[in-house]
Structures are given as structure tokens and as C-alpha cells.
Amino acid sequence: MSHSDSIWAKVELKSPPEKFYGFFRNHMGDLVHMFPEQFKSFQFVEGEKFSAGSVMHWQYHLGSPEAAKIKLRAVDDVKKYIIYEVVEGDMLKHFKLFRAKLEAIHGGLAKGGGFAKWTIEFEKAHENVPSPENYMDLAVKVSKGLDAYLYNNKN
Image (cartoon, rainbow, N blue to C red; front, side, top):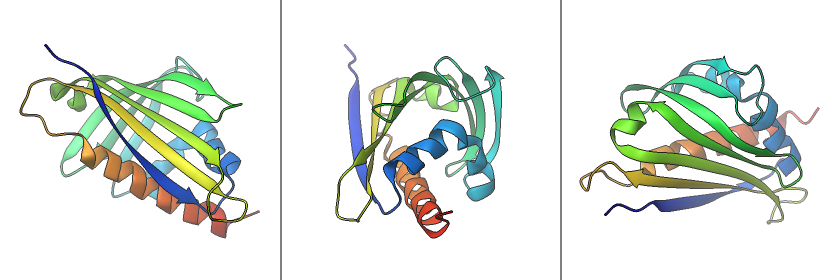
């Protein structure tokens, strides 16, 4: 019998959580230009903006070239979280379920900042599949790079 599992990570933010969340809410496709080694292409397949129900097609590199269709399951501008779910692509060869939640939360050590919390919920397609730590590492790397960019470009 299979079951879902989850992993999570927190990234301290120097930039305001609203600004960090706003990037993922409105400009996530810009990751292709900001992190060209990891993200190769982005396009909307269904919908035209980052709202619940929209589906995006991503080509990315995570040790090898991969592609995925990702559906925005939920977007909450008040609580500042977004839930993404893979609905098609290379990841589903290894996972029956792959869902990621990004939360931008106030608080933390940096003045005016907070933290980003990434949670990945997954169900392995078979027992030999490793935990998706490589996807979490990518989320953390992108979060740190984006935070540095937003903090250094305050205008």
C-alpha cells in the first residue's frame, strides 16, 4: 500500500515576504532569464496568468533535461501561499503525486524580512525512488538567489 510523504525547507528572507510572494504570483516565468542553467523554457498551456487552475509547461535541467506540466492548484494572496501540482511530465515516472507549496511568511532575523517555506508532498511510484531532495535543493537555491536579487533591487 502506498502513501504520500512530505519534506520541507525554510529560507530566511532579507526582502519583504510580500515582494518575494509577488514574484512567484506574477513573474514566475522570469526564472528562465534569472536562472538559465536550471530553467530552459516556460509557457502557459491553460490560462494566461498565475491564478488557480492555470497550467504551465516548464523545461528545466536537474542533472538531466526534464519537462513538466504544472497546475496551480491554489493561490492565496492574503496568506501568501501557492500550491503547484505536477500533472504531466518526467517527474511522474518516479512519483504518483508531486505537489509543492510555497509560503511567504513574516518574521525571522532580518529586519523587514521573513522566510519562505517550501513543502513538497509526494507519493513514490515504486519503493526504489529516492526522496525528491534534488527538487527541494533547487527550490532553496532559487529562493536564495531571488531573495538576494529582490533585496539588492529595492526599487
